[in-house]
Image 1 (cartoon, helix red, strand yellow):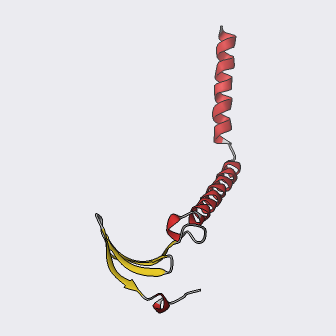
Image 2: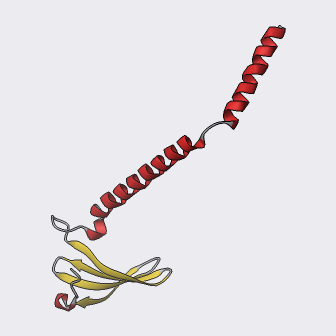
Amino acid sequence: MIFLLNVMAATEDASVASVGEMDFSGLFIKMVILLLLIVLLGFLLLKFVGRTNPWVAKGGANHFELVSWHRLDQKKSVYVVRIGKRVFALGGSEHSVNLISELNPSDLIDEA
């Protein structure tokens, strides 16, 4: 019985000593690598979502494009939208979207 208690005490002392002497550089390197992987996965996810964003869909059967938008305040914005060959200015709030006017497509400034 005393032998068993001595063995248990020795293993407890060894585990405490090993935690105190533990080298944290390996854990730090693992943490940095995992952080870089998470950032990379987030970047790839945002890039993928950007391509499949329905607001910016181009070509195919979907002829709707958000040309630009400007936030007026926290709940109100103005959108310039191209639907087919026509361009519209829309006012959007928390509860509604209203047509402001139809714009001339040739008046739009191409940033590309």
